[in-house]
Every structure is written in C-alpha cells, then in structure tokens.
Length: 360
Ligand SMILES: Cc1ncc(COP(=O)(O)O)c(C=O)c1O
Image (cartoon, rainbow, N blue to C red; front, top):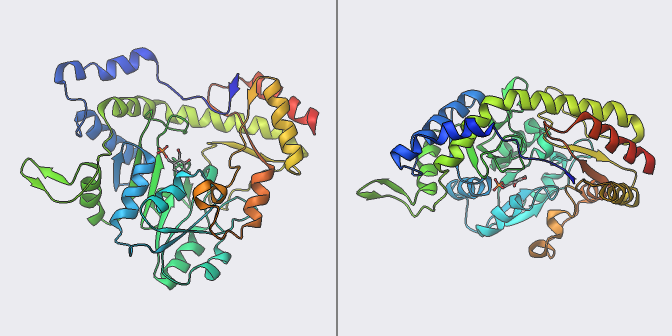
C-alpha cells in the first residue's frame, strides 16, 4: 500500500552513531546534550533565533496559548480547515473557538471575515499555514493590531517556508511547528515554539518542565513536554538530510503537476512565499468526483487522504458552535491529498496520475 506519506529516516548506522554516547551518559531526557545541540542547529537552519523545543507540536501550541495571559474563557478566532489539534488546543484551555472561513485560493484564514467575528470577548487569532500555504499575514496582523488581538500561527505544516525572504515562523506573537512522523521534518514526535519576545523563553521553559528552574526552585505550575534525547538524535540526523528531502519533494510535486495538468485544480502560493511541498493537495470538481478518485486509488493500493475533511468545526465537541464557513466546506468536499514523500518512486507518481485521470 502506498500511503499519503512515509516518515523520512536517516541511515540506520547514522542514527546508531548519534545515540551511542547515550549509553555512556545514561542521560536520556531533561534537556541533555543532544537536545541542546539540536535546538541550536535547528535555530540556525530555520533562521529563527527564538526557538524552544517541545515533545509534541500540540503541547507547544497549548503552552503558547497558556502563557500569553489571554483572559479566561475569551474567544479565539481560528480556521475549521485544519487538523483538529488546532481547535482542541483552544478548547482544552477553556477558550472559545470561533470559526472563520478561508480563502478559496489557498485554504488559509480569510482576513476579510475577521471583522464580523471579532466582537465580544475576543482575545486572539490562531491562523494555520495549512499545507504550508502562507496565510495573508499582513492583513491578519494589521487587523490584530487594530483590535488589540494576539496572533499565534499554527505553522505545523510550514517547516522551512519563507515569506518575502523571512522564515514564516518569525511572524506574529509566536508560531508553532510539529515534528510528528507525518511531517516534512520529523523527530518521531516533537515540536517547537518560535518566538520573538525574549520574555517568552522562560515562560515556555516553565511550561515544558513543571516550572522547575533549578534543584531548589519551582516557579510555576508547568506541565511536562520535554523533547527527549532519542527525539533530539533523530532530529540531528534528519536535519543533515532535510535539504535533499525538500528538493526531492519539489521534483515530485512538479512531476504531479506536469502529469495532471488542468484535469484538477490546485491551491495557489501567495506572492513572495516559498513552498516546502509538505503535501500534494488537489481539488476535484465536487465531492462525488473526489470520492470516486479516492476509491479508485484505494482499489489500486494507494491510500490518498481527504485532508481536511471533515472540517474541524464538524467534530463532535464543536458541532453546536456557529460556523458560517461555505468556502471551507466546499474545499473540504473537493480536496484529495495525494502521496508525496522524498522516496516515492517517479513510476508510482505516474501510476497514480493515470488512475486519477482515468476516473475524471
Ligand atoms: C495543523 C496541525 N496543528 C497541530 C498539529 C499537532 O502536532 P503534533 O502531532 O506534533 O502534536 C498537527 C499535526 O499533527 C497539525 O497538522
């Protein structure tokens, strides 16, 4: 079965070499040497001087929302066209998710819909660079300044993406990354918060390690979200191969587009944005056509995914909330995400495209 993605792993011997010192030190977590090295190398590769590692992207997101000092129970505007983690982070902290529709061109939050949603006790906006597509960051941030809202980006899909020459994770009050095994860059499980305000560093460190600052000091009621040494070792190894992996993705995405041509439609990149080709989403005419293509692929041993369908606002915990999101609904019924990962053979891309075209 060809799946929608396959985790990139370094050569076995390289990983063994990387973890060998752990058998001497017996230090497997609590910000050990590999953690510190990985954090430094990642900051450099991403071009983001403010970065704090976490054990999971989701916990990174919850940590940021917790430390911003948002009023308890206030409303946070987000998109329904995302993985449910985004909305769960809001709800699990006792905030109220407010669903904003998205742009048809790229599936990111539509800033022109913010005004009608920003009333009441609204405290923040949580847009998602979905599929790595850069949001309309200028419009969102201008709106946030006008209304006194904080902006946290869910950049789980946007590893390495740049906008107008700057890493997109440097935008807003903070951005989170996910290094889950399904992502472009993986530490098996893992994530990070990218921040620009140095005051966030201590607050995030407290969040991820019980608020413990030294042997005698517990300064805050933090949780546990530390990235361990094995995750850091995987990160250090994968970082050596990430440039080649991104190049291979770009090449395969180009092949898909040249073979599929106008038979499907695509999301459009914002001017000035780069792509990490983290996913290969294509849009069909309607839900029936999308489902037929998906079924034909499954029958041929290809597990494409209907990312992001159903919408997050239709998940059981949120069904009773208002969600006037016709564009997101339309996209989620038409989208199909095709397999894309660096080791995917070109012959498989050709086979997948001929199946898709055969159904259309
Ligand atoms: C958009 C989005 N946000 C948040 C997450 C959560 O990240 P993690 O799985 O690393 O906790 C993911 C991925 O799983 C995601 O796709």
